[in-house]
Length: 378
Ligand SMILES: Cc1ncc(COP(=O)(O)O)c(C=O)c1O
Image 1 (cartoon, protein in one colour):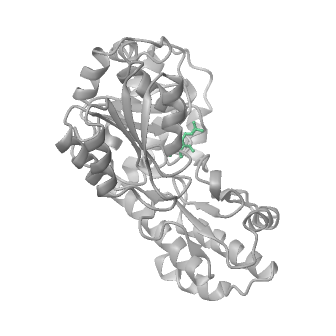
Image 2: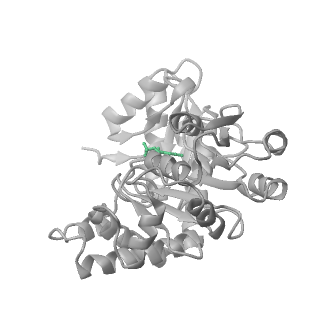
């Protein structure tokens, strides 16, 4: 028997404390008890994000929150700039098309971060774009975009452009970049480092974002941020919330407070470093070696080893689920997630399984050497 381990970039493993917290008789979402949970979660996420006001909670996965953000600050005919360096970066344009927006994409090579020149050029050509959208970590390519640098350029060239950051796979693995006000809308999702099941999104808005929301025609009932802000002021959500997840979120935030945010970010960096060192020692080629994100590591297996066969064998033999590639990386890469409830021993388990399966599939991996290269980190 091997334990089931989800070393995937979402959903992720959920700690016992969080599971137990959610195992309560169903709370009514208009009850005083739930109101307390909601307001505690709002204050907790405000702390996690280092934001100056409480974020909103939406009962949807991250894509819903991306769509809601564009819906609330853009009207049909508006122009938007979006960094597209992977499957999630490409999602902005797909959403924008449905909403009647013109999306100018900054096309970034998969596996690379957006560059300063690309950002400058896009804003120079579209200075009146309503919004600038970017992922903090682009989960499909395992890249961490230089959000602080990119958005500082945006704000210096076009101060009123609404900056929207998809922090879904970065939240709780790295600090929210920049000083308050640099990011106007920051989005987080439950099934990543927040250590929860899927179905809850968190959306934080700056003062500037709220002004933009107020001047934008309201086009969605379900995703009306003005209604949500009003509801939250009295400890409620407009519609039935993902209440069980909100209860679980408070247990997760308690764990974050016990570990400390800095220690949590250090742990994620360490898990990323361990993965990089060991995978290199296994002759794998790292995908985003120059700009790796702390939540997930992508790699091409050594020559001759099929990425999907590697993943399948790792799951069948050792109970460890890894993720494959998306879009143009389908069947080519493997991604090992190390976000949320993951410790160095989980990475040791993942690397051991990957090394042994590479050997089994005919590769010349030296698993012992890869492990001894990272044991000092444990
Ligand atoms: C960077 C990023 N953006 C957005 C999403 C949202 O996807 P979903 O709506 O499937 O949760 C994800 C989820 O994997 C993600 O990693």
